[in-house]
Image (tube, rainbow, N blue to C red; front, side, top):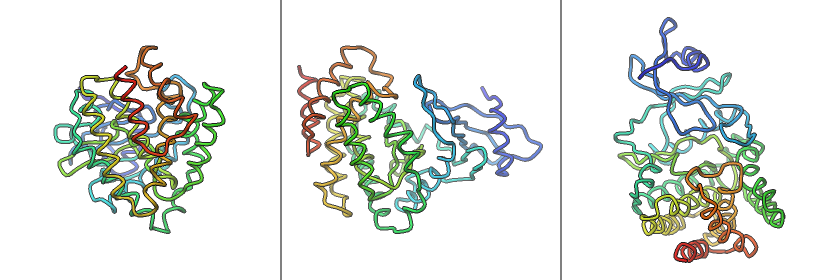
Length: 335
């Protein structure tokens, strides 16, 4: 059922000339976002999507972030589409005052959400490889563009909405590992090499007719591309607890992502970025049960303890290959 969006959304639509001055906006609130108000709005020329960044995220913890992150999200989308056309939605307009960003609406009937596919046990290594290939192409194209770093002065934003809630907060929950988490933060901050999406999660990737489409680049940052790779691989491992019957498929997707992404690395030595991703992955793994943003589908202490049993030793003795993390998780799942 269509309803009126919040006044801030309507005002942004008027400001962007996407809605006539005398028209009333009607649409549908879209689910899935904790950091933004997201709506599909019906207009005379067809539906569009508009999102407005929230100053306080919708999570249990007190988690805040500046609304100007939408400026950098739009910039990420433009650079992604320049590197891989169609890899992000087309931008229709942006209202920096309200933190609203309007973009093309991509209907779910031909742009299914990757997270929904994985939830239903549809784990396709071919699509996982396509995600990795697209991500590597974006990283490669931006790594050689000297104009990009100055466009993304987002160190503080990335710290506030990624490094602090995931790594710093988890270090506080595990005091004996605090120094290790601080080292992961420092290493991630030190390796500024490409344009990072920051939230490469199945919930932010559509399976479009022409390939993957990346959404929600609110964490956009000139930084370490290893973060994007590790962040996505982390979800493929965790999904084994959500849909256990598809575990083999999730692990095959993991393998396909690693192999394909490595093949696309041309801005640094593949072993170097894999080592950083492999060291970061156990920290992100543990963060999804003990950080500020735990995954919603790990609900029992038994499953949380399984994550902890795998992550903690790998944080104490950091792996240099992603397959080491995968093997440790495979052994735990078989136990």
